[in-house]
Image (cartoon, rainbow, N blue to C red):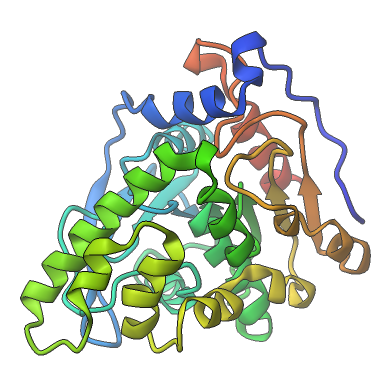
Amino acid sequence: MSKIDSPSLQPKLLFKNKHFNTLYRYFKTDFDIPFQRKRIPTKDGDFLDLDISSVESDTAIVAVHGLEGSSNSSYIKTLASHFNALKIDVVAMNLRSCSGELNLKLASYHSGKTEDLEEVITYALKKKNYKTIYLVGYSLGGNIVLKYMGEYADKIPKEVKKAVGISVPCDLKGSAMTISRLGNSFYKYNFLKTLKEKALLKLKQHANHQLDVQKIKNATTFKEFDDAFTAPTNGFLDAVDYWNKSSCNNFLHLINKPSLLITALDDPFLSPSCYPFEITKNNKNFHIIAPKFGGHVGFCEQFNMDSNLWLENQIKNFLLAQ
């Protein structure tokens, strides 16, 4: 199967603008979700903060946010609200240094760090006794989720039934180059600003580091930042090595459980290489929904956020289908 037929996204005029749709979702964070925080230790001596919105269900969604997001991101809160109403728990995973507190290790999160997702799933199964787990990841988190589904294909717990990735930079190099274009300067500036701030704080905590502080401070592209910080702290040779080894595109053909990519054709963050339509033709377990509009993790149709549930309905229809 290649592309799933789905109800068409029908945005009002302003929402046909990819940047407006992207930013509208981003800034709508006024949701009240009763998250309960749980800190879990990691095998490497660090920690992960989970925010759990429970309705005492035996089914849960493990949700992974995007670059510089958190459980406070509007798309995570919307997901929690929607699926709690369906009597499904949501376990929102905060990637390292994204929960409001820096993690302990010099290395932070990155786009391919599937071992952290594995630890969250292990915790959910052992401590919460879920019978069914679904994975949902947004943007960078979507890359982690889909990479996990392929990379761990032969050892995924039986309780993990399905996965969904939204607006996924399936080719990290292509996406990094696209975000660095002039028209995306607003996004690039804001991402790099907080990434560099966290990295520099980390260097103060780890005084024996061997990194070039000036290169981190001067980074104006994702390549420069990943060359200076992400790659060396995570054992990669450089940014290109990191991107090549972490892109989920390289693992999609291995997926053996139902998995869905929801991605807008007008996404301002994605290069043509981030749309793996060819892979769907040869893997019956990997599917794509690709509406014409939607921006990056937007998929809004109008100003009333209570009615902007096209994305959540696609997730629901896929995950809960028999």
